[in-house]
Length: 285
Length: 50
Image 1 (cartoon, each protein chain N blue to C red):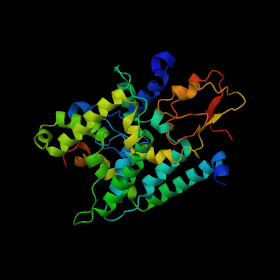
Image 2 (cartoon, chains in turn orange, yellow; image 1 turned 90 degrees about the vertical axis):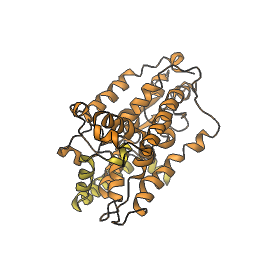
Image 3 (cartoon, helix red, strand yellow; image 1 turned 60 degrees about the vertical axis):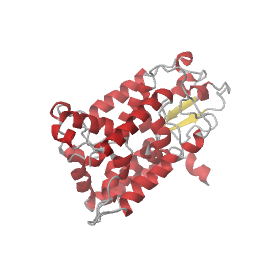
Image 4 (cartoon, chains in turn purple, yellow; image 1 turned 135 degrees about the horizontal axis):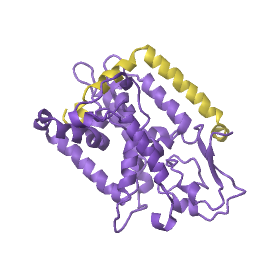
């Protein structure tokens, strides 16, 4: 069942997403000058995937920061960033994906573009969702830790080879605004832009493909969905098992069976679709 | 046992406290400066140039 038939108003959530995106990318002059923000706020990480090389970014990307500390010759263990991710994950779980991630908002909006045949699921969908955990382990942890240069420094391999958010938020505006960078563009830039184009096309056809299959940040937060302080609950006395919540879910979760599934981004569509208000969320109990 | 841990909000609270303690330890050993240095300089790898 598609969005039109369900008639679920998602614009209030998109409003929060947009507000958060604006708040964490409020260095607007950077989009004119082509320079990034260098103030003290960049000591702190933001909860969502937000490239710190975006001209507007006022905080640090947690995935980029994690790789930077793991890849640094003198640290290797990243207690500050891991502690931050555990704190946010234990508090909110993947609510961050649904409300506080700029790249999530971009994918949400892309998916609203009409396409003849939207793909809800396909053979191998569930298996492919495990890919994000492998990407987290290999590209965010192992490669920066062990594939190091002569100084013992590891590169941020996820950012370098995969991250389309970095290309969109940082790569495109900075290259457009800086002549010197335009002259330095090479095969890596073309590769990353190809990944971005594929991600954009897929996001029109499939709901949040990057979050479902690739995002290492979503993979980390997903582990906390079952134990986070903020969580979903289904009142079995009120539930009439109509299946409307499962049909409304674009992440292909059945809230009645598993209200805190690792795949749930807590967007609240299931709550809005429920005719008996059996699905509740909050921090009680 | 696992079901009990996932049913109570206190598991999340304990994890949040662990997260805060890890953050404090990380800040104490100077990790924040690595994050800051990385974040205030254009990350060439991130944008696809380096």
